[in-house]
Image 1 (tube, rainbow, N blue to C red):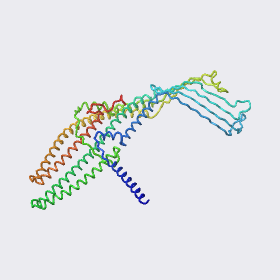
Image 2: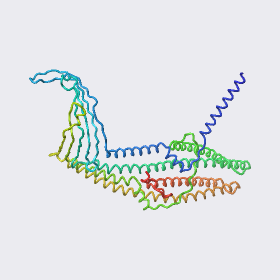
Image 3: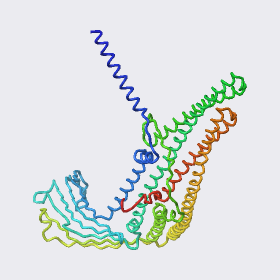
Length: 497
């Protein structure tokens, strides 16, 4: 029995160890990504992208709320019930005061259909209402319950010469919503820009780690060769010590490169939403898309697609609305009109039998006679603000064009520089390979080999830095124009939103 129990525990322990090892292996599984895949993964899963999507959704519901203001509103109002019991002070005909008990109940219920008149800023409504009054202490012969109501009435409330917020909201809110949709696409391209920077930070760290590993191996091989030459009396002791020091430095460089790789991997995984234990293998995007960018075309696309182009018109519309509001606040005139029927009865059905006509027309005025220049100051401030907005928008237009112009020119320059750095990297690599072979045959000194190695490493890093600059500039150009120049497609199309 003891043997079986021991075998069982051993088997269980083995299964647990194998399961833990399997989980660890899966956690350490290396995942390979291209730049395009990482960008898409970040757009789908990163916390920043989810925040952008939430902002877009909020803008959508804000726009829906604005649209609902112009739809008919059916509203039910009422008090059910309002019960009241107390001793009240009642003045008698002879002037004396008597305290009498009151026990009453009042209920009212109303239903109204209201519609905003966007063109004038008024509201029109159709209403019906019913009231019921119960006197629980009615004297004998007096009715305990009474009804009153309005079977139907039509009401109009119309400000005259006032600021019409519905008119201006109808002009401004669609611009704000259109801005939000374009800002969403631009912000998503901003995610592409940021994750591209992270991608190349990791990729450069990955390249540095590969360079450090290769240099360490080569330095160790050189040290072995020089050690044999030292034993043969060819290499002096001080040169051997110098090479040994290079080996130690190469070991330190590899350790630092590995630490940098882990740090950049942590930043990448955190942003795009991967498990921190995931190991990455990033593919170098050396295949450069072949397309030309025209400055005038890029500026045209930016004005056609960017949210800023809508924002310029929206800022001017807001300034105009503020001027209109200042004009409307100088004095207030309000027209109220109501026409319908009302009635009172002891029984509810009798309310609708021969109701009486109910009519109301009122015109309210509020005109300042002496305001010590308040209206003039408010109007002047609104006009000055409108002028300031116009000048500001004009400057923003210039800055906007300049930004697109600079980005296009920078992109073209980076693309040309990338081609040069690619050739330099290839030349430096070939030179180092030749120098290494010549060194192994004794035809090149260690100093010349070190120079070739340093040039190889610096040109390799310069190439990947230029590659990073190109792809970052590529996505920045997409974000500025909301246009994919490689595939010649718009990144935002209103008809598909």
